[in-house]
Image (cartoon, rainbow, N blue to C red; front, side, top):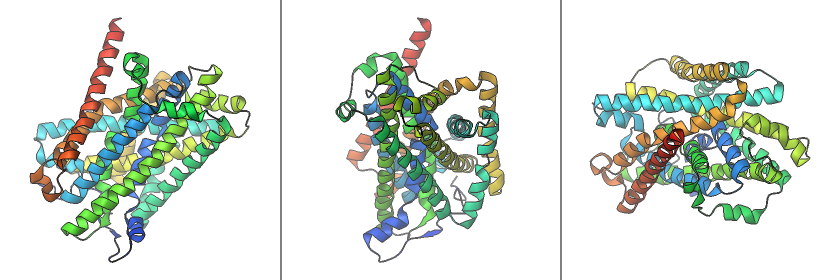
Length: 436
């Protein structure tokens, strides 16, 4: 059954694309969706995994950060292609072309992934509020949930306002970590070496666990649903030429934005390695511990406060986009047409409840382990979003002239295979560890 109504219908094709304008004017018109997607690649879940990776293994896992971002750039380009060519987002395509039982299973798995993602983002924002202002985590989670009101207000004024707010928050994170890099004075030769692949990652179960956590934190399944929908906020003309133009500019937008995310992800790991690993603090897993130690170890009184500000900006930007992704998934898979405030409230409740339970049940000091675990859950679910995306964009009957060329099919399936293989390896290592 074909989808009846686009997701995010209130902003669907509302942003005009200028006709007969130059490259930079059109690039500006198309810029925006990529930055909304990019915040998912630098959210608090990334912080937990990057801090754990840097403090425990130095710069060794920078190669995984680089590989994950390259995979992300490829997969997000497929999202642009799917959304522009078919007029469907990934959730709608799954509902229309899979059986009801398979579609329902994919929806359940996606909701689990969004819950894990939201857990990380709400915990990150709550931790930032606790570090900066001394608020208990439970209160911080409830306060950060008010982002739904900000989203409703801004989207009522136009989707460009949502994009502008997220861009401001992303730039804030980038500036904060630029300062932290200067404070930590890392060894740039060792950093470059860290970007080279290392076989030890596959041989060391602890390193592999963190590596797959980085993969889950970087290539996020809900971002695939989000991007394939919000790229359709642009009102390009429904002709073959204009669709190819939308694909080119949409891909350029996401590539630039994810390159910025790569720099920020790398900066988090580099700061953790330079500050903790080489100072003897190799078991830093909690964000709170990193915050407390930054200023004393770096000898810069403002270092911890800058770290907390960046964490707050990261958490708030990613909760905004996760709320949008939750709405897209609910509408795409279930075709539930409800007022926007009801949909967003339901999406936010699905995030608040697990976060509150986790804090109350496991205690405030367990947040670092919960953040890393949430990213591994995301990685384990990722295959169930990536494989349908590659299938759809490689299907000529669905995509027509916009189908993936042969080289892109091979590369996309290679990425999907790597993701599935890493997840199987992680499960085997974890299972054998339990038996041992």
